[in-house]
Image (cartoon, rainbow, N blue to C red; front, side, top):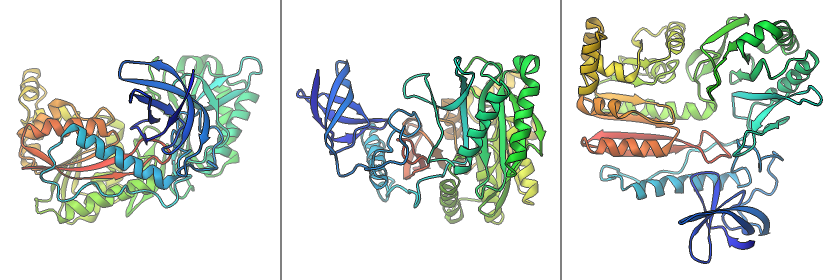
Length: 476
């Protein structure tokens, strides 16, 4: 049965929030605060319910009256595109504020509250990388590619996406045409990946395939498609094939073959030149990532702490090298467990003539174990014979004062946080794409004498509920 609801606020997710006659929370997608809507509850639980939007009785003035994407209501990428961008920023700020209040974080060291979210002047066509899953339509043999429908495994064939570089649409449509002509199917082809530098002069194209089926049945057809695309689109400077036979949700496999170019594109990032490969992690929103880097550089340069910095989960060295390039005398070590990323970081250091940044291929847990921090890890490393005396001296000589972490969505492990807390680290700069795990990790550090000093929100992902957060956590 349909009921009428007044939308009150946005959740930290795709849903808007209303309340039923019993003041129980009702989550409704594609609604906007201020809307009067008709919705039908489909999942009722003890403390909350989910309802499907049936009709907008009276639209909110906060709505975007004409979103550019006509499939945004079902696509899993942009959950908030129906809300005007300026209001999206306000809702994200509000959500972060409420999460901090409800978690009861120690804010005694904060000199000011959460500042306005750092948004974009032009929040469209910002995404520098896409990875589309594919499927073959059995009745026609036509290849489709796009995003999954929300909360399902149903693929939406995307022809136009206003949040990504516009050249991607044209290349992707031609790729689908050529694959269909060459009878390339989803039996061998799993995903199509395209990434670009910021001025769109260099693009990388990768087909992610099942190795056995590729070699046995579709090697020549896929190679012809890739060669034709590179011939038609001159900005495609390098072409690769990535092999992934796994049955998990992990998109990229460990083996990548280059069939055209160097396997990398050259990105101009602030005052750096960065080589980026197929498997490199690089933020999808270049201009907003630069703003985060500038905030970190400004803080480190003004800090009274010694200029010795540890960069955990450093990837291809973007943060490390940005700091080393702009702050004279800085000593920095980047730590990353993915060997290809470390190779990339060392290459980028060489390209930029940076000699005072070192990169270590090791997990964050093993790093601290070898440095002698973290009781559990260090004992394990000693017992397993993993301690490298020369590297241990290098790490302990670093004298950990400031650590930068930019972990995946799951955040840091307790062992890493414990190691930081039992070392000499006085300050932690935490870059997070998941405020939930960020707050969890701050709560852990509070037990060891740390507290939140400042926190900023950066809108890395306009039109979705996701955002990036930069927090400074300091020893009391």
